[in-house]
Every structure is written in C-alpha cells, then in structure tokens.
Length: 237
Image (cartoon, rainbow, N blue to C red):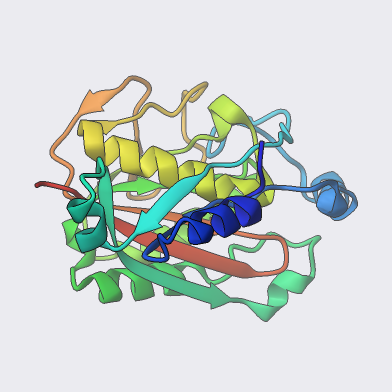
C-alpha cells in the first residue's frame, strides 16, 4: 500500500491540487515510549469501560480524500461529508509520558466548534479517541465535560474496543468512522463495552442506533500533549 505522501504526489501530478489524500500511520519508533507509559499508568481496552484489563496495541491507518467542495461537485465525486471546523492545542505537561494527559483536548474541540460556526449543543455525535488507558480516558471525559458543560447528553462512540489502539494512525480511522456515521445517519456501537467507568455526558451504545446526525466531532491526542479535533457536517446535495 502506498504511503499518504506518495499518494499526494501522484494526485498532484494528475492536476488535482484542489484535493489530496490524507491519513497518518503509526510506526514502531514510539513503541518503547508507549510501553513505558502503559506499565506505569495501568492500561485497558475497550475505552471507558469499567474494569479494563488489557491493552491492545495495533497498527493501521485511515485514508481520506479532502477536496474543495465545488471542485468535487464539478467532477461528479461522491461526497460523504463536509469538514467545517478544525482546532488544535497542546499541553506542555504531556511531555511527562508517565502521567495521563489529553493534550488540552477541550481547547482543540472548542476551536473546531467555533470555526464551524455552531454551538456545542448542535453536535449530534462525538467520536472519542478513547485510548483504553484508564487515566487518559478520565482526562478525555473531563475535557468533553468542559466542551458540553451546557448540554445534557450527547451520543458518543469509541473504536478502540473493535480495532485496538492505533496511536498516531487512529485519527484517520476515527475520522473515516465519523464520516460514515453522518453518511448513514447511524450512531455506531462501542464494541465490547458494558458499563462505563467514566462517561460524564457521553452516551455510548452497544448496538447501532439510527439518529438524525447533522454535525459530529472527532478528536485525537498524542503522547507528548498534542491534541486536535475536527467538526464534520452531513452532506446533502
């Protein structure tokens, strides 16, 4: 499989600068750092589950094509969703990999929501990062509590129980899942999930649920204190 960089080069050579493939992948270089964090912090998969017992480090990536909307329409492309907001943040304390941290995820999410020109209450679905590390799951829940402080409950899902933790490769897969949730108007289940250890205002389901989804937000954070969030909108021709 070609790397995203090779795909982008080939895409540009074809004269389609208005769009490009995107999708990070995980490498082995970070494994030693990750394993040290796991040993000291205690780990478990699935994400947010009470009595998490194990961690599942996997490899993978999601590949998406981002393209100018008008250009995609003009060439008759099948459009699944619109990217309408992005935000990024960093917490310097994240450099201590032995301490749980979500990289100021609430700031990244709020920036993405602001750029989308909507309110937090307009978000219908949260696709969490959900590393499965109990301390990090708690940090993430607290971040979402800040974002949705004025909301009651919001539908959410975590992919980790189904595919394991992809680390740097997770963001692309989570974004693809968000896109398809909007496209199919379905809240995906959180696999291998029973009782939440920490959920706050996030509402996870164990079976697929049909819902009216207009906006969804997906996020990721990394070892080192970085975080990012994207707001996507259902596409209607």
